[in-house]
Length: 316
Image 1 (spheres, one colour):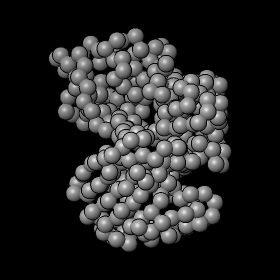
Image 2 (cartoon, one colour):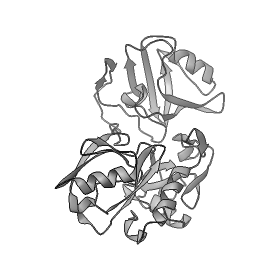
Image 3 (cartoon, one colour):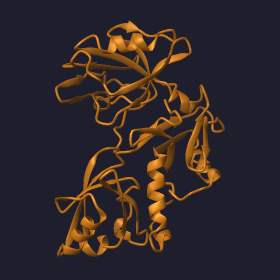
């Protein structure tokens, strides 16, 4: 196989695919820096770190420019894009998918590599809890006219493995909630159980990185839980990770690490070494979830005001 080949039909000329490009211009391969959740590119399984090899048969090299790519991606109502994963040696094919009348036709004869797995980030899910398990066991924070989970009672087994710091609480028992007072009132008034409708980590991005040798650097520089720099040409850089590329309230900010290899990192953690050890702990593969640092700071500052807040801190 020669790469992921995605064919998009029913695309309006000039329609935004929802992905940012980087590289090219004689510096490095032209690649997808990141993909916006819910966009056409996201629906079709594309993600940050994929090198663009060709668009509609036009080959792209290191000398290709952003203008070349944008022109090719917006000049037709049907796109055939071939990409390669820059973070792995082997070339990958993605499984067949079809969504909203836009086809992604991909070869299914995988003999090497792996299949693209769709992340849970941005999905909506429903969780049912007994009233006694819900009341007083969450620390909710109001941010941007929405409610967010900053922590939950780690001593309550019924809550284990169900929530993530940064989950958005959309409704309780079918009633939309935007304030802590509304949420507490609904939980107090319910006779037996509470159904929570959540959006999983809508502020987050996930990067899955691979290295050839155990001791190879990922190329990330952290200060406490914040990403402050990415070394040019490193594994993280080739995957599209860039410092200060997060957005919060319309302004750029740094990324903060909130989960490593499916294990939460305390949003109160101030030890750079502790977080780096978690990242290095899975040998040649690691998965990191970042959220905007300004958002995480609001959650952590609020959590510290919670009585016995230590019991509400999600950690490994």
